[in-house]
Length: 178
Image 1 (cartoon, rainbow, N blue to C red):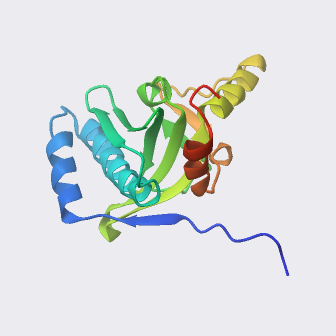
Image 2: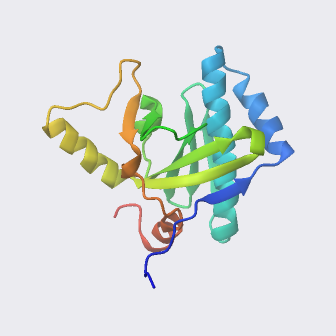
């Protein structure tokens, strides 16, 4: 028998109310691309908030949303989790906007796949900020850049921890300064 367990992604079901609230907020933006990006991130954020609420019942979870700056995060007591939502993960790279990546203080990034037609969000991985900073400095030391011509960053999927429950452990056992 193998001691490894198959990592099954966490699936969170969306409600009609999620779509209504998200559509209202995202429609404030000027372009279709901005609206779609915001829409995905807000659906992902609502799913993430629901998932965390079920597991961290004593933790106060506060959404922090700035649609014009493309910031979609949750404050969990003293931690900040920034949502990175995508509509598919067919590529081994994840595009992240500069405001998402530069949002401070972010302690964790949650990679969320939004399957709008199935009314579900899937928590695909967690990236700690300190790990991200280490990866970025390694790239910089090799004179490589992860920034694309459109200004977004392209992060390898392998940087994200595929076990979403580690986020629960981090929130319960770490301090934000650690």
